[in-house]
Amino acid sequence: MSAVVVWMDSEHAKLFHVTTAGVKKTELKKHGAKHSNSHQEGHSHKQEEQFFHEVAQAAGAPEEFLVFGPGMAKTHFKTHLEKHNHKNLMGHLVGIETLEAMTDNQILDAARRYFKKYNQFNT
Image 1 (cartoon, one colour):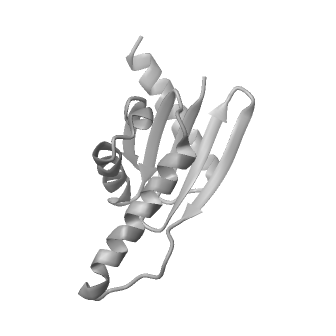
Image 2: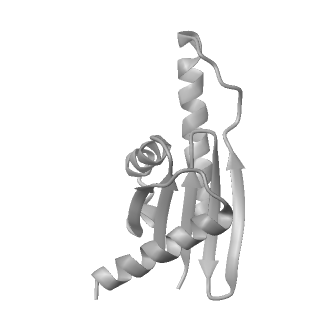
């Protein structure tokens, strides 16, 4: 079994690749500085799209895929996956859940509980 758990906000993502061999963590950050004026909105959107592409690429093609996060970034990421036809992830997405900033161990614990609940639901 292979699973990828992502915790993301609008500026960075933590990816946890979970296999029988263990857990491998990857962190990605959105490139560029924050801008608040309307002139930079198009540039900011391109930065977000690039960030989402990088997260999708880093996730690979897991058997199960779960996305956590505190705000709207996780929902925007799902929209990105649908829009850009990331079938390797969308076909294996088991959930998108709100989860505030936590330690890595807390994120993994929440993922274990989620997968246990998800797998029990389907049996």
